[in-house]
Every structure is written in structure tokens, then in C-alpha cells.
Image 1 (tube, rainbow, N blue to C red):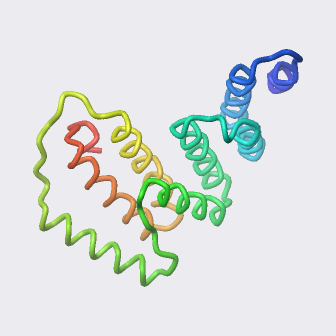
Image 2 (tube, one colour):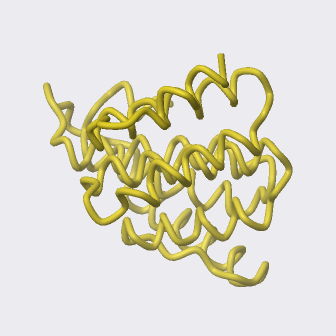
Length: 173
């Protein structure tokens, strides 16, 4: 199946969006069969070829998948560095040092305690808020195993964003 995807990706006259969609399917296939290194390479191709043309949401989703696969592959340094960069793009700073992470967890935990867990439920969440909250959740679930302090900090960012957003499903994750 991977060979067929590669053959299709290389077909002449293929529109850029179709080529990218095939590269993303190839990446998903490779991840599903445990070839995370090949999945990352396919994602790199999908984003590298069209990086400037991709909508920000799609580029971030590809980067999220790369981070997930890197962490699952055991390339923790790459996954953690890429996660820091993606979180910075979303407006969240993750300290480089352990002591900075502990201090940040304490600070954001205190902020959350003062703020409380109350929220006003909303029927629909703005797409940008939904993307940010879902990215935070996804990164939390991977980072907590690699670096528990950074995972906890990301979890606190997620909970605060979910409470602000007011989507009950995202709050209880």
C-alpha cells in the first residue's frame, strides 16, 4: 500500500492539494503500521513542499502529528522542541529549565485556583478557540509521558483555555 501511495504522489499533473492529501494519507498509513520515521518524512514532505501555501490551521495540524509521531518514536528531544515551538506560536511559553517549569506550573496552578473551575457553557466554540484547545489537549497527552512537568504545564494551559472557551466537553477532558 505504501508503494501505491508513493506512486500516486509522484504522478505527473497532480494538483498540489491532491498531492498533499495523498502524502497525508501515506503518513497515516505509515504511522498505523508502526513506521513512524516514514510517517514523519511523509508529513515533512506534505508541509515542506507547500509550507508557505498552507493555511495556518493545516500547517499546525501537520506539525502536531509530527510531534506525536516523534514522541511515540522515542525522539523526545525533537518532539519536545517542536512542541515548545508550536505552543509558542499559540502564545504559550514553556520554560527550558526544570526549575522554570516547576515555577510556571506553580504559578498557573495558583492562577487556576484563584480563578476557580466555573465556566459559562457555550453552544458553539469559535474555530480558533477549538483548534487551540484541541492542540493543547493533544500535546498534553503526549508530553505527560516524556516530560511530566511540561505535560502538567500544558494541561494547565488546556484547562484554563477550555474554561475560558466554555465548551463542556473540552473542559472535562
